[in-house]
Length: 136
Image (cartoon, rainbow, N blue to C red; front, side, top):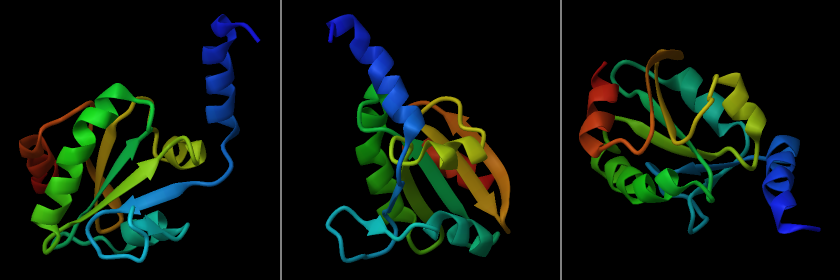
């Protein structure tokens, strides 16, 4: 294999997808990484309310901007745990989940209230922008 083929192989692996990992940062869970069971994202979205919205961050471990914003997302999740739920979804583990929500770039942030999308942004956004998304 030539080094020039590596990006093509990485894309093929990304598109193949096997299972997805969901990181729910707003609730204590057994795993040290906050791993939640498959289906948690759909259930969380369905249970979202105006009083307690759900913010989903779609990211990948190899993504530079995702690495930058990741610690901010974790801090933000702790700050808003009483009034919002923050879930991190690794799109490498299940690209279908990102596709279902029209994610075309990462990191992508989508807010749901009453089961409906109310706000969206893409990129390494600030915690202030995360607050604004929840308020929309």
